[in-house]
Image (cartoon, rainbow, N blue to C red; front, side):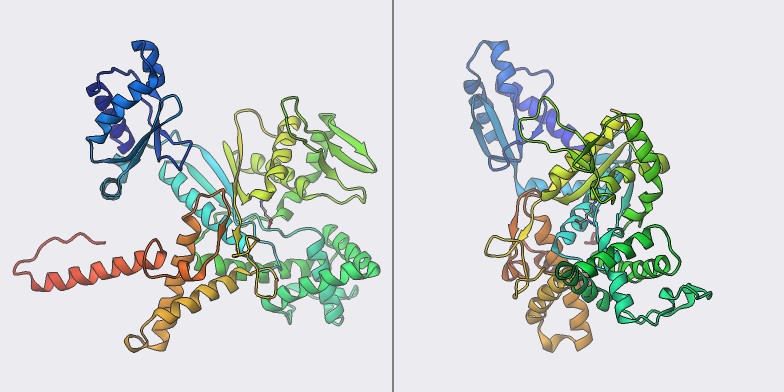
Length: 495
Ligand code: ARG
């Protein structure tokens, strides 16, 4: 029987020892995490049954709970909500039990097909700290959903479409006009053309092109033209764009691999483009597209809204498609190609409005029916000590590689140079740094912001990834030593 089922049964017994019979006790995760991990709401229903004040009933139950050493911080809130927390010892016992036999100790769910859209890296732009959070949280959710028996497809959903890529291709044209991609008369095979550009170059090219486009109207115009050429698959431009994606993707993959984050699908925004025409027809047919100042919009307001809900921008006044439209086309694509029961999106909380609009428009147009669940799973930002999103010293965007390096450098300081070779030191510090970073990122409540504190993250003491690794290795070494002293061979569980 699953741990939660066993616990629920035991709690039912405890309530009955307190003098009350409850039919269907439900152990709920607490709505107030500051008060406890779980809550019991049964005092309220029992109050009616026994004609007693719910708070008194809650107190009787709490007294019984106190006697059980599996629970701690038992407190009563409001009219009679009982909050409980499981002791660390009991949690360890639970985890040990689960790890010995997962199948028996967790409840499998009714299997569903779930697509998790996480990571969201943008081609030709460096991954930043926000991408770490999405990758880390998304990967955890993917593994948990699989454990519960679901069929899960993780999609990297690369940002590989639109003006940023047009600007990158334009800047490459300015730097290397002699490349055959820009020669209309070139008849050779573009796949054989060597591009004199590395991913590091790409990461510099986009910021440069973006500044130029802001300062120079004609450059921006040229950028638009190149974007249009890529989108209408003009030979050369289209091939170069594909090459840029490949270079960038290889680098993105390398970082995700380092983080132990894996995808089943490496699709991008551009893969949804072939569904654009059909999407347009569906929206036209549903009669929900309206003209507004030259743009095409979809109203997504609902009567029950108590906050303003602006319309979704379906097509900009200059005829280009918006981020919202590519997300709608992606929903259509996913339904057609994979037909999932649920789609989860793991992004920064600042995209809440975007997804609310997209989901509402998708339902309004009938892209998905009521049985399909669309869920945005937002997360808070990683901030600097100033409370603003974590930046580099000179105020620039902190790239994920930089962030990993920072933690790495701090970790290296803690390795005793006498005990390892230079090479081992590098290898160990990288493993420990990634563990520290991922652990520190997973520790705070998902939806709230948190502060990046290098000393705390890389600390060898307390709640840190490095401490977990350290303790595991220490235990292993102690056990190995102990075994060598044993007179007879003995079974020692592997850690
Ligand atoms: N590329 C986007 C960004 O960096 C995130 C994409 C999230 N997924 C989506 N389907 N919109 O902000």
